[in-house]
Length: 474
Image (cartoon, rainbow, N blue to C red; front, side, top):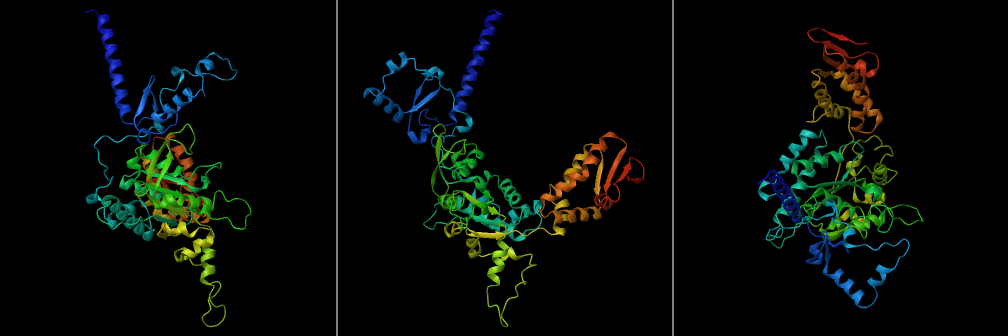
């Protein structure tokens, strides 16, 4: 056999291998109807056409009915030359629907399995112990989350073992900005290794208005689960900025992003089958839809709820205003734990509807960060900011140290910014800029110590050259 024949055989094998690989890959996903964009699980068996196009029997029947009734005369259409109208041939059609809009199909005979085995669900104290490694303080919040998540996944794993049905343990987190709400949820999902979708309520609007549809929160979870519906149905959805959908007060305009969004979310939180767009934020004719059951999806809502403390103070001081039992008007003005006294009626006064609050049975608060907590956040967690910078400089073979005075000065500056832990990184970035710029210039530098004087602007850091005593840079 000649070398040319060998070469042709190799090409043919490669092409066959590619076709086989593509076929195996396509077998993982459901077929989508090219006309109505519904998946095979909804429409039933598809009719395969050339160029990888699939059409459901309903759409095919409608096409035949239209042709037979004389509503469409394709022979005339093909011969007419209408400006701006292009008659599509089958070869002109899109060959493949984008991968992000394909739904993974279940293999035949495969049973639905929980993501977390009931024997392997970590106990609440173990979940909290893991959270302690990453999150400083917020002891009550970590304990409440650990118990709620443990009970939720026990509920998912047991399913319908008997007639006693366990209710969902959706959560509502209340805490000032920068107190660690989103960070707690991210850490939790990473520890449990379950699909997580983080979204915010600010972009959600009533159906039919500009903005994201309410079902888009489930669509994001489906994308996080790799378009695997069964995996998504056991995931976690964190909706941040939930206070932004509070009911508007004293307005004559239609409230399309307030109470109506809360009403629309009731069925999601409770648990129901909803049609969600695959690979998109809103439903339209060109996006496939699939059905997701939210019964076993854990919803965690979080928000800063500004001025909620004023509502709580007003309720607490509404008792008798004269006499020995009267409350002093300024009694709670300097109470740092005022948010922990929150009650359902306070959230209703804020603008959350009772039906919505009823589907979030677990309500807990996160405390604002103190100076001591900020210092701990700087150095104690596994991925603390200081450890990140120390690792960056270690790659240049330079040791980075922060003395206690510097940490205290950074924490004081962060307290003035009043944006919680987010302020820490901004402050450190500012002071580390010159150091990170200058150190790679000089290979003789062995250690840098950040001092209180450098942070306060009255001095410079201590620089130690390799094999020498430290010298202060003014």
